[in-house]
Amino acid sequence: MYFHLFVKRKYDKKTYDRQAPWLPWRILSGLELFKEVILDFKDVAYIGQAFGDEIFRVFPNINPCTKIIAKNANDDVQYMINRAINTKL
Image 1 (spheres, rainbow, N blue to C red):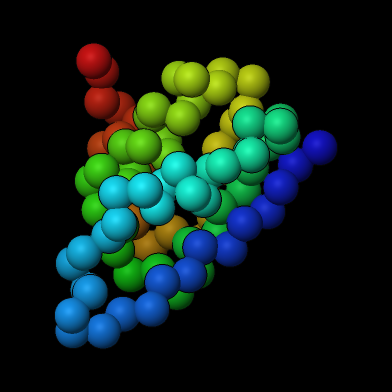
Image 2 (image 1 turned 45 degrees about the vertical axis):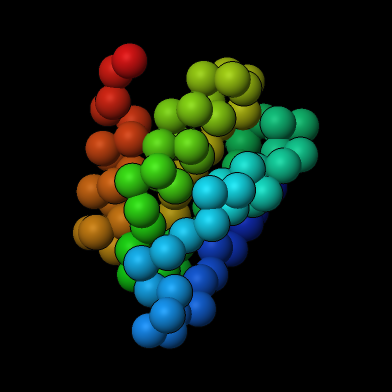
């Protein structure tokens, strides 16, 4: 069983560089019940380092049975995803 989630973010001058620290866990809440989760980053221009780290490093370490797949990520988003995945602690 898999779950497909569309990630969308509205931009304005006040919040462009700010992301709520709880946002990754709000998005991922309950997704440990699925074997595969597809995150669709269409129309997302940028994700922060902490956001990518929580979704693509921390969550998979806690929930190894759930596979997170990124879809339609632009170069900037894919860079942050790769950076999170390749971080070794």
